[in-house]
Picture 1: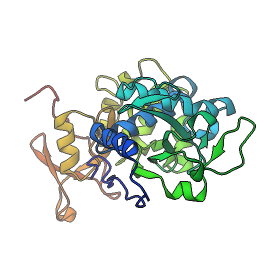
Picture 2 (picture 1 turned 120 degrees about the vertical axis):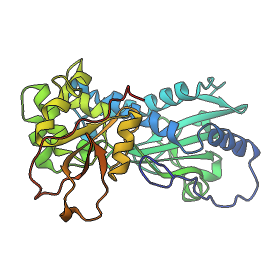
Picture 3 (picture 1 turned 180 degrees about the vertical axis):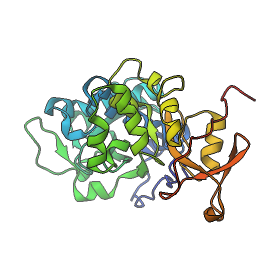
Length: 321
């Protein structure tokens, strides 16, 4: 179970092969040994999307905002980021060497649309797919034998997997959670309101005001701020934490004490490079058995829409024991 997103990401079962491919199983075992829950592969894919979008300098946050050449380059970046993540040596003829086997890394924007080049026929392929819009990804292995490939190819002689080939994929992860891009999951009107102000500081304020109870990544903050010192826009002493406090809104980060507050309130718990914001209210009888946390010597709960706005308490100092 992924504690951060609450989604099971255990390896999916695969069809029983006619003959066990020892080399394929060795590669699968090593990848699962290095990344049992898929966090590292998911992080490499997340980095790839963020690198392509380059939101800090472009303000882009959607796949359809990329140029065609950038989309085409996505597979190469996935390959490079995975190689860096696992420190994989290059293969003799293909992308990687894993467990003594040559492995080609194939990424497709369409699930099942992988293209196998002539040099990878008969070899192992690591198949990857991801959707930023759906916040999920898949990874599997296939031996690209002739029986697993369609006969026709494109002008580069690359071929797709046949029906039999798609059924023979040794899945490592199916529908594993990708760190969400919160801007893709907000109502269009909220996104427009977030990007409306000319000043990056005001845009960040609006982000935490409108995306409450959702995990907000550091990269989303950078995309909204579009400034080199974007993290300064979140902190206290003039950042969003200070400016939104009169509205009752607190912003919790990756600090242990902040994570404890989020957990006590039943909010998503921020991980490394993440935030979650929420408006709080002093606990009253009408809140019933709602989760609460003690801050500034008083009990606070998540505010209801009809709760009056009151100045938020200070969060625990992350430097304090």
